[in-house]
Length: 303
Ligand code: HEM
Image (cartoon, rainbow, N blue to C red; front, side, top):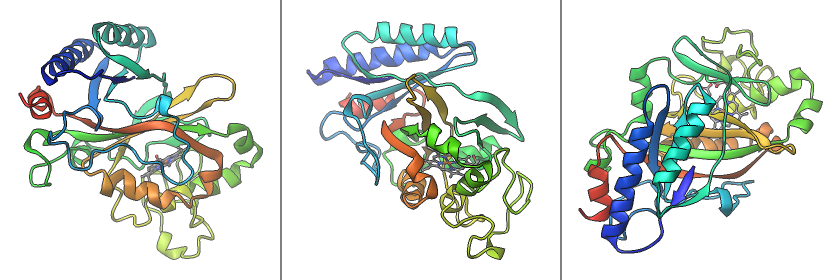
């Protein structure tokens, strides 16, 4: 759910932000997790934003609908019980007096499970996702959490950049291709095994396949992570969505400590991928999940 805060005096806006923060903290209990993330449009002029935070630009092929893009604040509510998630979301929306809900989208993770420390789920293209993510909390923090000395404002240390992309899938077109063709577009088998036979959790030998005979050079994984020694510094956590009438796909979401080295570098490489003609990004935004506490409110609204 992305919300906008109407204009007004800084003090009024700061109070509304603090109230929303309280509502989100209250929702984050039991089996429901909830957090908020800040859009670049939230802060008062002159406030010190995380240095890479800006409005998400349109990448090649994107068709961003303003009615489901950007927003002053993103609130994400998740959990295993949809009724509890819905209830908590309604609670937050109710407490957000003075806020305008800009857009909202429901997601689900089909066959959600954990294997070797990685959250895996199947997307509407029938592929299991999550293998390229780190298997340990330590490595996850290494990729996703802002550290001191990175040139970020002090208040932002311990936070994380969150990118959301609403990606519509042309599933009918996709389903006309053979499974083999689909696997060559992704660069892995549906179950995660590599195309050269390497097991899911080991490294394939791309060097032995310089022309992409086995794993095409324009396959998703080869472009996303061309050098297996240096995995892209992002942690992905996407959800499927299905709004009926064929409007289904992925609420792609990833976390990183540096937007430019993380999402943006990968996304630019993916512009030439074979999968591009089956997907259309129609919304989302760039956000920043602040570290726990409310030091960020003073930082953004001048105390
Ligand atoms: C929207 C449609 C997308 C689909 C259907 C998709 C699907 C997949 C699948 C099936 C995998 C292989 C399994 C895995 O490692 O999780 C994968 C890997 C990956 N994807 Fe995507 N993805 C999509 C979008 C994106 C976007 C927008 C990015 C980032 C800009 C991205 C970045 C990655 C990365 C970094 C990997 C891991 C590569 C590796 O380490 O081997 N994906 N994706």
